[in-house]
Image (cartoon, rainbow, N blue to C red; front, side, top):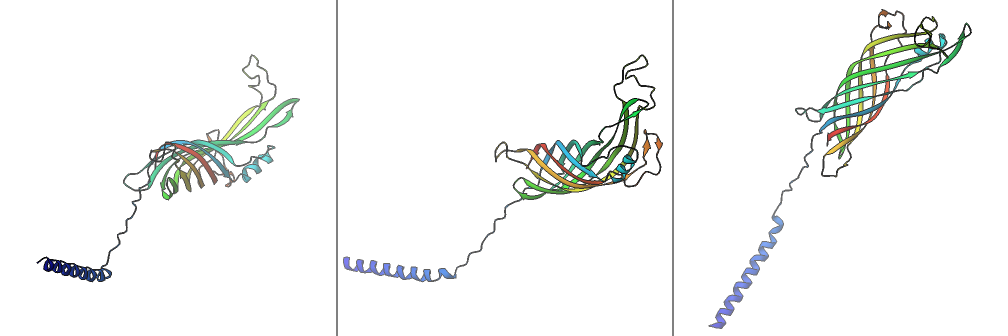
Length: 267
């Protein structure tokens, strides 16, 4: 009886072996579908504000022609402008943000000394420019926390040319502080122009992980290049009288490079 059970067990083992071999032969017939796991891209987020420095290079050839004809030194570019920038993302439109910019600065000629009726005088000219703009930017991710942001800004500004002439070594008298209130060779003369501007440009911004890779980014450094197109209004003398025949080349258009930082929340 024991021999019969042994033979029966051996027969079952050999049968199961043949079954497994048959199944192994069919494994090659099985196919598997590959599932591609896509990494979800997080939309750009940024809200904050900070300090900016801009190097603005308008064409000053017509201005300098006027200055040298009048006996002044020439102005040089770029004009250094400083100010602030604030940004905030628009939640309903992914990767789009709005911004507000306010910048201003000036450039001056070297002081020029001369003598009138045995009195020494100094004259100089200062060109100042300032504007406020509202913009839209679209963020394109280049790498983690590194973004390229093309955009456009529109707004208004004011350009002013101020001519100053004063006496050297003036003394205080009973007639007024400064000693020369009635001297016709002492004056402060201004022409100004209010204008509309459009500034297309592109920015590169990076938010370093100052608090750690798993913490919010609170600082963004920014570089920007853009070109300002200005649409000038009337030039006015001392803010009142309209000045005619001003060369059309005197305008607030030109290339600008900007660098700065913002504090807030960024990704």
